[in-house]
Image 1: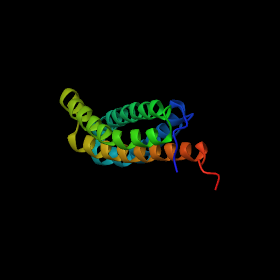
Image 2: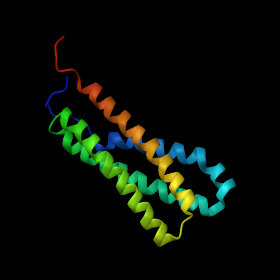
Image 3: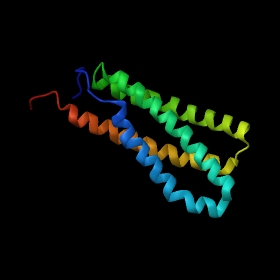
Image 4: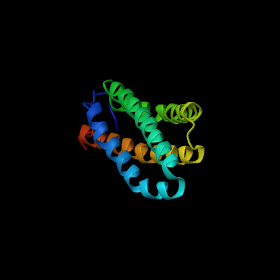
Length: 139
């Protein structure tokens, strides 16, 4: 059972989960991307990583703010911001593609990979915060 006691979570805590997930995905995929798409693919991958990381950190900031109102609000913020995260990532990637003339295939693939990796990390961060928040029932 969740309650409305304020949660003490921080944006820095989310950074400790989100950034390493993004860096791990980038490191694992660098060589295959270079083999398949060359430097253009690597450039698209870097832009995709920055876009998704920025969107995820904005989402985490919204969750931290909502957590002041309790665990229930933090969970709702995570769930409701899901569509905003997805649409924000896609819209910013489309803008980057138009402005920077990036490889569209590499950009789309890497936005998807980074999104999944960092969304998973954000979910783990929130789950850990919920666990440390503690149960509300003495049973």
